Image (tube, rainbow, N blue to C red; front, side, top):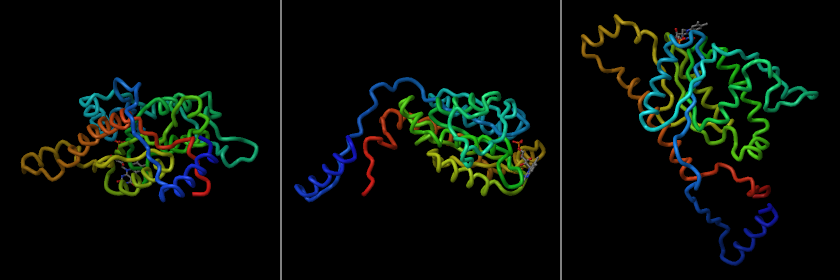
Length: 260
Ligand SMILES: Cc1cc2nc3c(=O)[nH]c(=O)nc-3n(C[C@H](O)[C@H](O)[C@H](O)COP(=O)(O)O)c2cc1C
């Protein structure tokens, strides 16, 4: 439907029935079968031995229990040049594929296009996500910039409506702000954080002596962190499946309402 017909229909409806409400039927997607794909992206420069990676692995493990297929990207095992800011350069254009075709940028972004949901895990570095995580978030702008073109060729938006969980490890301070910033910027790109999907752990809790002491004292105060990781995996797997099964579209290119 063209915007003209859309607007005309609304006007006629309003005149004839005193309403301009649009009835939308949410039919189950006919084609969706199988597992949802959840992509874990780990941003610690310490790789698989890092605390944030281990937390991410726990979320993915729980997601698998609830039927999801999972994949991982360990950013420090990849190469990614920093964003060159083509967006702001009148002589260039920010598009996907990114101009950095000699490094792993486009492989990573393609995996994000193919995924249904994400887990982002990062250590806190100076009250912010790690530098490699920030580079990835910067470079996601190429998906955001030509999301319509990708949707036209792939049949769906690269990021729109995809749920995520955010995980951080820190020594003492900064995770709330850093994860809050990530949530806000990812949301700008259409990626939303699920309930219980924003969890951080102080590094101290990973020390064997502390674990032993807490066990000896019967201390259960921090169990909520492990519970949150499990709940994030479960919810991510199930809510992503619900969304895919419903066939819900967050945007409808036929319905553009310029003068609503
Ligand atoms: C460059 C740098 C900056 C850091 N800044 C902070 C900080 O601002 N706040 C904090 O609590 N911890 C900070 N840390 C400590 C790490 O966040 C902490 O050790 C974390 O558990 C490491 O996680 P990982 O094992 O996933 O890499 C910093 C560490 C580094 C290397």
